[in-house]
Every structure is written in C-alpha cells, then in structure tokens.
Image (cartoon, rainbow, N blue to C red; front, side, top):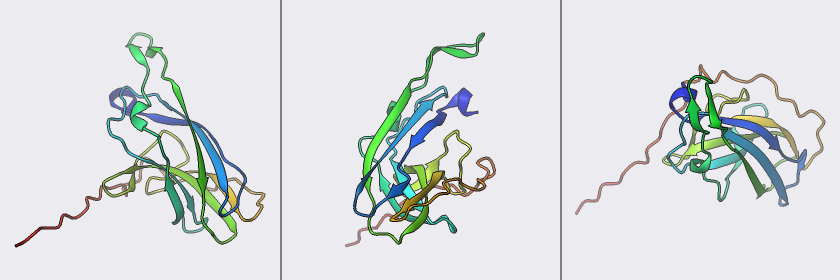
Length: 177
C-alpha cells in the first residue's frame, strides 16, 4: 500500500560505535531511501534512543538536529509498464554526533524512530524488518561504559500486527475569567 499511495522509508545502512562512554560524543550514520510514491508532508523529528535490553523501555533519547524527512523524496517519472521510476529515488545519508548522560554500564539496544511532534511518540513505521511494538526500530546492541561482544538482537515484533501506535494530542487549557 505504501509503495502505491505514500512514502516508504527503507533504512539501507546504519553505523554506530560498539561502545559508548557517558559524557563523550559518539557518531551515528544511516542511509534511508523513499521507495514509495510520495514524500512525507510534515516535519516530524527523528529520534535515536537507547532501550533497556530486557524491558525495551527508553532509558535515553535525543532528537536529531537538522534532519527534515520531508526532503526524503521518492523517484520521478513512474513507468507503469516497467513498474519502476525513470529516475530512481535518491539515498539520503544522515550523520550526527550525540552525547549520552551517565548511565549504568551495560548492554543497551540502539533504536531509531520518527516521532509525531504532537505527543512526541513514535508514529511512523519504516520498511525494515527490525521493529519493536510501539514504533521503534532497533538497530543493534551497544555497550555503554563497558565493552560487549554480542551485538545481535533477538526476535523482532510484527510490524503488521502492531496496533499500539497512536496519536496523543496535548490537552488544551481553557482560560476563564
């Protein structure tokens, strides 16, 4: 459906260090391509987070600066007969330097998500197998203040079966005289 009627963000590559040290900068880089038929029309932020390895709860997150997903455009001049674009969609590379606070040493899960700015909740799914219920895309394990040797993730959740994504509208306060 996304291919025919909307955006379809494919995460093609992701790079991050094996070990993060609290208080120090670390670099992440990823490549994304919109293989759908439309751009995404709203300026929603991209978030990088660390998840607890057992509960998948967010223990740290940061929104990326100067990343505008509206610029991740699809290809041009769709050819129905050949079922492809004459001009293929461009690959977009995102590079960022981030810093985590003081966290307990251990293994965490690095994840990426696109947030609906109304409630700052993950609300956009990418076309990638790595998916956790709730809208985050786990990338791999990372050591924080500790060297780890197992970076592999276990099972993923079904993107198709996840019904937890929702919109959260901030409450409006009514002014009275």
